[in-house]
Image (tube, rainbow, N blue to C red):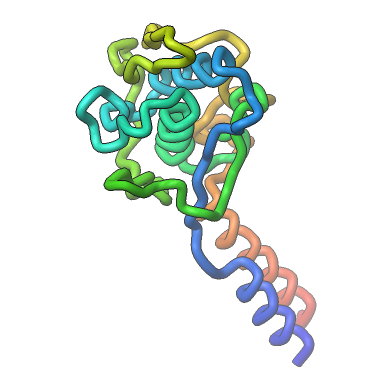
Length: 182
């Protein structure tokens, strides 16, 4: 009976929505946020929505564009741990940051598949205090992106996408229960 109660508790804790968004922190400098945009857009994020006339171009701020780019990168990398750090300029939230016709993908499947960057995926120009900065799209800035990982797709065996973590925990629990009855 205790094992069944433990199983139900584990499923209740790990159940629920996988919806999570990566957003840039408002207390970061515009230069740091711009570096995050450059990195994310050059490393696989789909930044077409923050181009001028794109669905997420407005508000035309570095913070808004940074959040969209960081979230696209995070989702396309399968929500792996570390994919929403960008040298501490971004953080995870369970609150949908979209609005005004702009839809932020909330899951890896909604973000589409990750693509290898060719350096041509650039974000919009961002206006800050009267100056316009344009991302280079050349692969970003060294030191940005996930911290402490060697790959973002889990191919190095060190990372599991969030969606697979529940399956792993359930498998471990069932194994423990099965072996405890032997």
